[in-house]
Length: 87
Image (tube, rainbow, N blue to C red; front, side, top):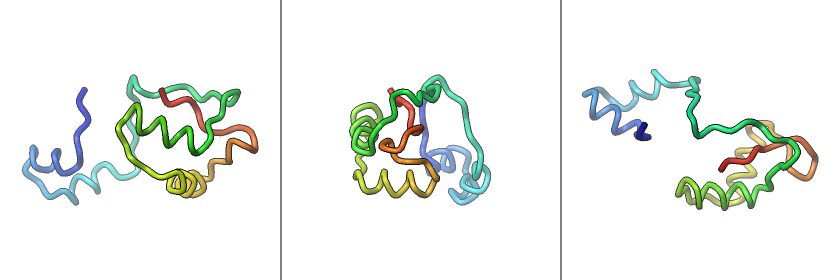
């Protein structure tokens, strides 16, 4: 399975990228990349940032990770039960 951007999917199907956005909004896909939650080894925001860069090539700031974590109502790794190992 090869990951595609919304724009690539839209171009392949010959539709507007907004149509793809509406079609996939609030939907999830279970893949082999996913991992079970491991609350015994919570990741810090910095570790999440580094892992995203190393494993997925995603360049993102620690503050962005923190903002997104808070938006998703995921507690900090300093509090207890949180992020799971990504790799």
